[in-house]
Image 1 (cartoon, rainbow, N blue to C red):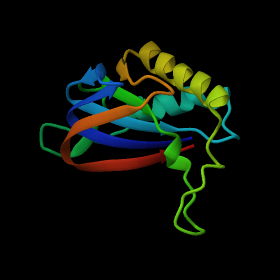
Image 2: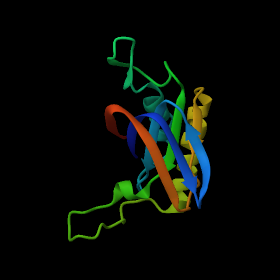
Image 3: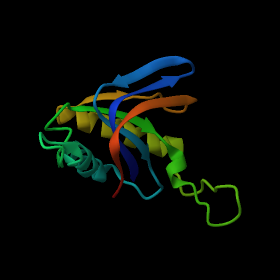
Length: 145
């Protein structure tokens, strides 16, 4: 599992021209799965995202989590996080999980976060999506399990 996490002032996603998810201040998460990912790891990933301390405290130090602050996350499926560019100039997607495996994992992650109390916006799996965001400082991290 790979998640690119961006701290945002706001973020939104459209699918086929229609806005389907929007958050205010929080985390925009691009989520990718590979073949060996198992449902049993989803609670650990949800806990990691929920409690990741990259939100500012009152002194401007990244010392708080989205759980401590806004509780908002936007999750967008992103199979291209497993693109392999080691050979040639065209990425290989062989390491990305097939949609039949990835979609239930993605849905489980959304539900696990909601179970923790998060407000979660999402894109629409297997559609052409556009993601917009307003960065909130230089705070982008890669989370892998």
